Image (cartoon, rainbow, N blue to C red; front, side, top):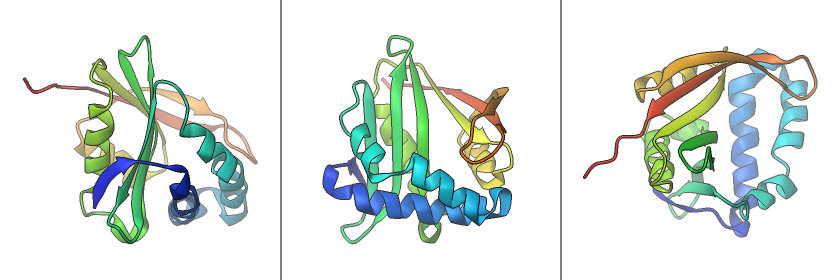
Length: 166
């Protein structure tokens, strides 16, 4: 897999990846119907397409020439000092191959002025929590995050300093 900037032609494959990954991850947590509601709302073709042109953002895909195996979307906040990772998903069939770490490193490199990366992860998403802890993140807080089709859900706030090599 190589990482590149997403384009409009990637949107259908990104949506399919997100739907598959969300059902694989969250059906046991939220139930299949609610996950369908969430993916229809949060991962619509229109909303994904709009992210391609947002200022101070980066939308990346991991691609092997045949399929999109992962994606990441991040924005710069606090005058560019904080990178907020909104999404990092790897297709279930591609997990455990280093693609998540590759996407994370690449998206950080897109924001050379940033000193910190922050993200929010569903508290019950044990795979994601383990991944981010293994990547050197620390929990710095906990919030209630609004989720489509139901009550707010607890989310952990993770941060990690970005160390730039000289």
